[in-house]
Amino acid sequence: MVSSVLAFLGVLAASTSAAAPPPPPNNAAAACRSLKSSFPQQVVSSADAAYPAWNGRWADTAELAPSCIFRPKTAKDVSAAVKVLNKEAGPAGDACPFSIKCGGHTPWAGANNVNNGVAIDLSGYMNTTTVSADKTIVSLGGGEVWRSAYAKTDGMGIAFPGGRCPGTGVGGVSLGGGYSWFQGSVGFVADNVINFEVVLASGEIVNANKTNHQDLFMALKGGNNNFGVVTRVDLATFQHSQQIHGGLIIVPVEASDAVLENLQRFTDDDAAGGVHTNAGLTVEYFLNATSGVGQILLWVIDTDAAGEHEAIRPFLEMQPQIVNRVATSSIAQYPSSVPAVTRVMMADLTFVNDLETLKGVHKITMQIFEESKGIPGLVWDFQFEPLSRHVIDQSVARGGNSLGINGTADDLLIMFIMPLWSDPAYDDQVYAAAQKWHSSVQAYTASMGKGHRFEFANYAAKFQNVMASYGPENLQFLRTVSRKYDPKQIFQRSVRGGYKLGV
Ligand SMILES: Cc1cc2nc3c(=O)[nH]c(=O)nc-3n(C[C@H](O)[C@H](O)[C@H](O)COP(=O)(O)OP(=O)(O)OC[C@H]3O[C@@H](n4cnc5c(N)ncnc54)[C@H](O)[C@@H]3O)c2cc1C
Ligand SMILES: *[C@@H]1O[C@H](CO)[C@@H](O)[C@H](O)[C@H]1NC(C)=O
Ligand SMILES: *[C@@H]1O[C@H](CO)[C@@H](O)[C@H](O)[C@H]1NC(C)=O
Ligand SMILES: *[C@@H]1O[C@H](CO)[C@@H](O)[C@H](O)[C@H]1NC(C)=O
Ligand SMILES: *[C@@H]1O[C@H](CO)[C@@H](O)[C@H](O)[C@H]1NC(C)=O
Image (cartoon, rainbow, N blue to C red; front, side, top):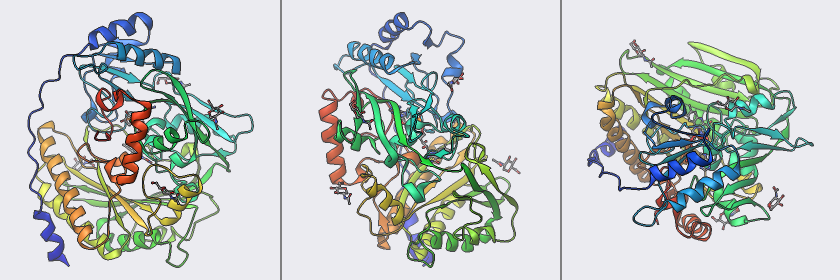
């Protein structure tokens, strides 16, 4: 098998990156002046002292220099801004370029920021969490981050699915589908949304839900920033003790074979004790090229805190353990925050949960790490996220989403690489390695008959065609919804970042 795996490493030469053409002239300066006069306290430009702080991102790789940054307080503010951006049309009749940011955790430049345009930052004021009187709905501002939502609902006896890294945003996580610790019992975060409040391209504020703009509602459940600026996300809650049991176990990389076997078994609904709704797992390889030390981080969780769930027991029992930080804690205290980083990127793909394929994919990933070790300070991080059929069934039970995986007969694994490095001079080399990884693994899993087209927006690289990965039928649906709600295609042409519909 080794040779057949390695054969795929040569399939794609590193991409050549051409210098980007200069951006066309636009009316960003005029849009900024207009916003500043309407919202004097909510707009900063590069001369202002607050600009660097407002312009900060989780990763340095995402930082750009917008003409100004606008922090709305309400949906009406967003609506007013979208009208200004429409009015300040550029030469081609497009709206002034703008970007949308919530938690700012997407690591690539331009996903949530813009050069020579207006950056809308929802996180400044629209970071609200309110719970309905009967506690069945939590309403999250379009700029809220999960840490804050968990803290504000602590002690209320409810839970709802959200980002596992508390610094990620409600906007990005839910619009990309959203993988949470409650995945096994309630599916994707997006599946639990009961209403999105959205500012459309025209500036109109609408609610999208099961009974109102149903097509837009479905499109937003996975459709990223293609349809509007989401100003509020209403999520269904469930009663919960708010106690969870889990945390981090670190084992040496020498345990890799056993880890992969346990991962495959965990993800297999047909294995003995296979369907488990209250257990969660992420397997993260963390390989330091400088020190040569490799570790495997096993993030395990038992969301009902009833003790140690049998599905995660094989991981709890692995020996030797370098670190064991498994404990019972509240949702708000769960220890998984990831501090800000310098240079980082992510790229992802999906394949069928088959052990031979998994081992082959692992081997390709290790081979590309070997080839990339010359990049100074490189940490080669890659992670596996189980996506079992019982999770997908939860999506269908809740009315479906736009991810295009509802018909999948197999248990799946989402995998992403997340290399970290420090010198921008090596950006191109890292991206080339990531592209090679992506195409090599895709080709390999396809050759095994175990490939899957789905690419999860939340861990994707800029070079990925995420919306097309939802399948032709879904892409067609998303394009139709886009034309209906955004006839001038503002979100395709003038909004920077995100994964476009390719129209
Ligand atoms: C340390 C770390 C941990 C992570 N953990 C998880 C996890 O547990 N589960 C998971 O699913 N993902 C996870 N991710 C991936 C994460 O979901 C994505 O990076 C996501 O895009 C982050 O959302 P954000 O709001 O923080 O990012 P942003 O970069 O602010 O937004 C992401 C995208 O969504 C758009 N967007 C954001 N808000 C809105 C809005 N209100 N209206 C319209 N468009 C909007 C932006 O324009 C951008 O294109 C993690 C990422 C990191 C770095
Ligand atoms: C919202 O975020 C701002 C800026 O980080 C912070 O000062 C403020 O306390 C937050 N408000 C709420 C309600 O969380
Ligand atoms: C759906 O939208 C309509 C129209 O705005 C609103 O009246 C209704 O309350 C919304 N439903 C939900 C579940 O939010
Ligand atoms: C990698 O190892 C080097 C050498 O031991 C160390 O200086 C560096 O901090 C490590 N990097 C990370 C991210 O742990
Ligand atoms: C799955 O999604 C497709 C559209 O992509 C839809 O036609 C079909 O009804 C969905 N099936 C289920 C079981 O939800």
